[in-house]
Length: 122
Image (cartoon, rainbow, N blue to C red):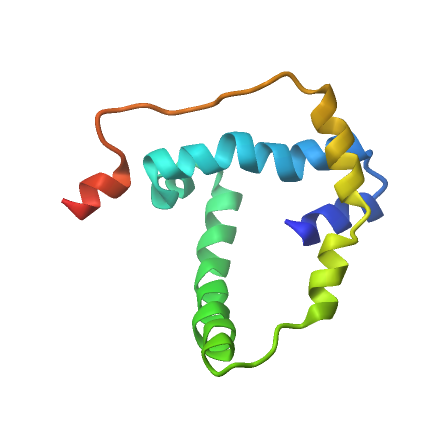
């Protein structure tokens, strides 16, 4: 998400557009939808380009998490505090706070008797 924010800001997009496309859409739309229907269903119903990109990059991302990140944590490798500082000090946080003041309260939910996760567990 932060990489997308940086790319959009470097491309001259306004903070409100960057926040809407990167943060608000993920939190208000994608996360509840993925929880309700599952990631595979969401990917299957995306455009060809989005589908292709997610299927191309997902295994690489999983590999990085499984083989590098998780094993580093398990082996006690210290967290890179510079990356944490870069995130917490990023210029977008103040803009997100201001944009949220302008938004009406939103409660987006998907309802059904069961979710994808519950079906898989059964």
